[in-house]
Length: 206
Image (cartoon, rainbow, N blue to C red; front, side, top):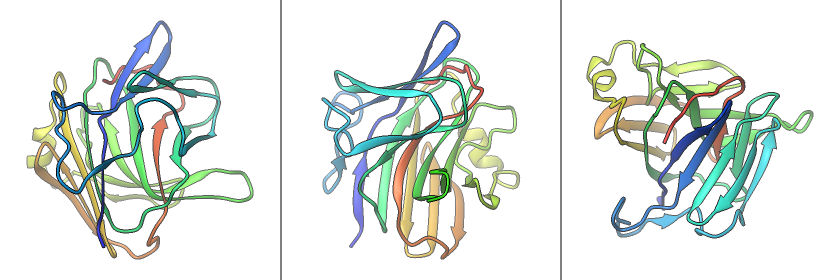
């Protein structure tokens, strides 16, 4: 059965430390569709935990705020794992920044490093947001080099609708309703979902 999840993602910055803010959607911002449920309860980080670097996450009202810190990439991961699902969110940039959303992700026992499929969120000129990257493992599985329609769909100064669907080995992504990437890959059939604060970034995303 297809699990359906939905959340709204906001990134921001204060001073020299990047803030990644993940908002629980309200009816005015992102109407909850039938069959979908929230990953964030709007009050706490229950069901989530931080792994990786020294960036921090905290619940503030209806938001999850990630503050950039030193060290490697930091992730806020779900305790629960998911196999087949549809994930929707909204995001926007205020300034240059790079991040991503891991899905069907795994964690190495040796060092705790998160790895696996990642929906790329990249403000760079190449405009590969929506591409599928294999974090800390094989690298790019599907960039947007040969998908000019998806690259053109990105709104640098406005909200972007982001969607990920995983059904069996088929992984599909959309950016603002435009098909971005599609991959057939059976390496990971299930795993956790994680929000990334990228190392070295002081970018602003909302």
